[in-house]
Image (cartoon, rainbow, N blue to C red):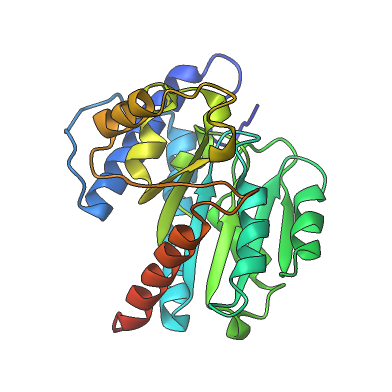
Length: 262
């Protein structure tokens, strides 16, 4: 699908190598337990793209730090509930913090329209054939936001559990979303995103009984690949777990504001 990260055609082996490399780097950044592996050097052209993205991501990160702006990158498979969670967040966070969303999709601005209707600023990035957002896209989207009015910026990445994992956007933390409708073994199939995420949100918890979601097994699989993971079980429809999510964001925001900028 995407020529930029090399996931199209017969390049799937590159994908896994890049995903492992990104997860390894993220583990170092977060101080997470991990193993050291040696992989073949990736395609030189792709390596150059990732290196340039990392440079721009560091520029974004410094910019966000100087403004004390908390930036959270939400990654999930399509339909896991990112937009629904952000709609609920906009409605519930009005007295807690000011937030905006940059949202990415291959086509349409449907998600941005939904989020604006929920009461918050939302910038749509239409990526065309790219299956992820990158740091350069985020830089340009920032030009459309009043950053001085914001406490928290959410980035709703393109629905994909592989490619977005490779690209650092300069965020403070990644949040992995995983819905009960996806079954219990997502962490085993896509370990890198769960290993690189500071928080896993198990969404659509109101459907757990109807889908016969094996909760104990699912959480055991998550702990198997990401023992350090924080977990919040949540339903954007009935509000269960929403306060825990907002509390997690507020704690991250307080920590960001407490950091000294040199």
